[in-house]
Amino acid sequence: MNLNSQIQSCIQLCWKCRHECQETLYQYCLEKGEEHVEQAHVKLMTDCIQACQTAADFMTRGSALHAHECAACAEICEACAESCEAMEDERMKRCAVICRECAQSCREMGMLRKAA
Image 1 (spheres, rainbow, N blue to C red):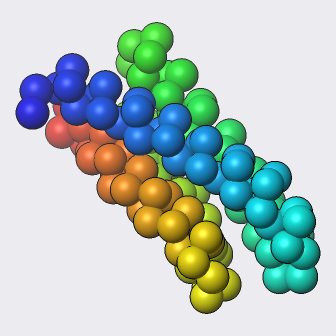
Image 2: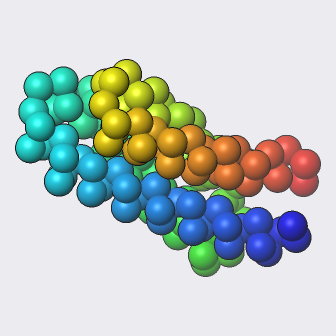
């Protein structure tokens, strides 16, 4: 996979993760209540939504600093995945899988910084 297609794939995964987290948070967690609306979890999901959007924006505009943003996004997505997975709930596990896919792709983008 060449660099351009790798970046395009990462952008798509960021948007997919952003969408899944946003929909899960607002259409599922807030309705479900209990542990799904604990402050730390809601903040992580919100951070993930924002980090994915920001990373996608950096890559879309060809920012020379996109690798830095992607490295941060990978950490945030991984933390969000752990929080979602801890709920022992199928919807949350689905969200965790997408967060981990995005984290892996962003981690690869972040490594480009080290290789450069």
